[in-house]
Amino acid sequence: MSLLLLEDDPAIADTVVFALQREGFTVEHRAWLAEARERLRETPAPELLILDIGLPDGHGLDLCRELRAGPLKALPVIVLSARSEEMDRVLGLELGADDYLAKPFSPRELVARVRALLRRAQAAPAVAAGFVVDGARVRLDGVLLNLTKLELGLLLKLLQAPQRIHSREVLLDAVWGTSADSGDRTVDTHIKTLRAKLREAAPTRDPIKTHRGMGYSLEP
Picture 1 (spheres, rainbow, N blue to C red):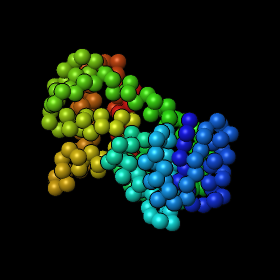
Picture 2: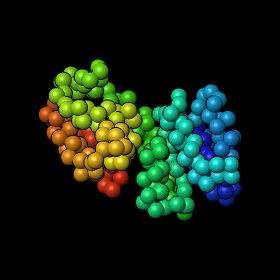
Picture 3: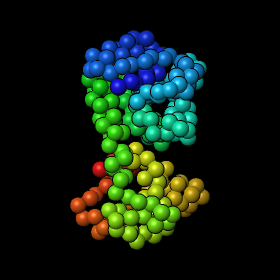
Picture 4: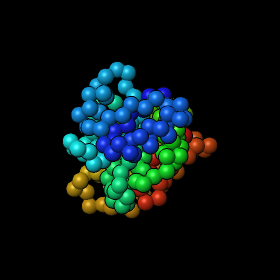
């Protein structure tokens, strides 16, 4: 599998490349945002991107945001960053990163996260395969869901990127709008009712996963 690493620190880049190549991955390394953008315009695209945030010619999360708005919106992205505070991790995930690993990190953990993210990416079509969306009508395993407008908005937002963690702030903004007089508890309450209706339609499923302190995702 071909991976793209965007990292300007040569020592860290060498460590990452060595660890991944030892596990059988093909790794291309770029040190500048402009170089990574050029590579991502080529075909075939890499199967996963690992990027640093602080780069000589810009901010790595700008690239992540660009990807989510373009043809490579489904490309799995892992952020490597010296910024380890909760708000930094949340911001990275809100801007489209699939995973966030703070420096210093264990190369073995990075390899494990790469493998896990690639497995999830390969399984993504199957995750949403049971859902059929037709305008404002959604079926799960053939059963029509009786959803309120807000429950439908939450489900459609989660379905846009299966297995990506959506923070409560992102869900609140997407469904209620930036001017809404609501908070995290509002999102949690509607996720609870949405979960109940999904279980009623498909008792063996529980596709919405809670990530404590981070948000929700749609899982197998």
